Length: 124
Image 1 (cartoon, helix red, strand yellow):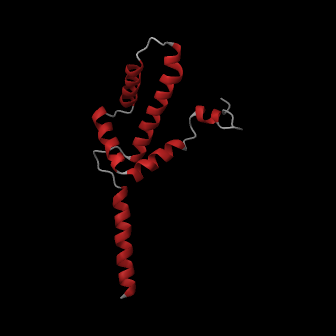
Image 2: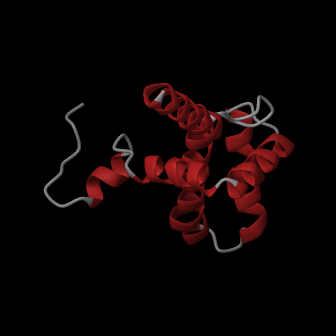
Image 3: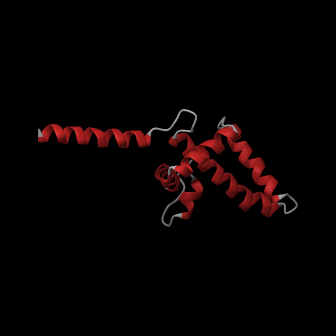
């Protein structure tokens, strides 16, 4: 009887944990959200570090919006889909934390590699 109860409780816990990971079909998957957010952060860095410093006559806010729209277009994500997905992730902070942790650990970006001491860019 105890083993049956243990199996039942384990199944319920496992099912509950699996359901927390499931993202509705209308929401961007964690992997897609990670890629889109990563590129949005990079576009913000590009605008702040290069575009606006080279040409101070550019309208700051509109330049940011234009680049964010370019990211969404590149990833074939509508503004509505992104906003809905981001709101979902904000309501599920454990998922958002995992996405943000994955973004912070990305090693593919050459700018990240340059900023780490003792690291060099790979030979081309």
